[in-house]
Length: 86
Image (tube, rainbow, N blue to C red):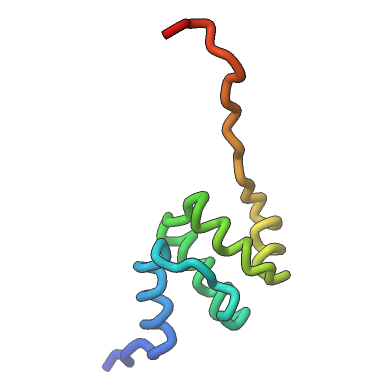
């Protein structure tokens, strides 16, 4: 017989599904934050907004993981002037 998932695992799964609704992840303990980040990567849900959310926690372990995976924010370059006139 298969054991049911833990309440912690179910909570992290729920957080993953609603990650775009969060404005601050810094109150989360480090181990939960790392698990949530890894599950976000595995689910293919890492967007620029969500990456900024994780980076804003300032947690060394998360920042080190982001750096070790060479995940970077790419700032788009906008033209300073247009050759066409509207």
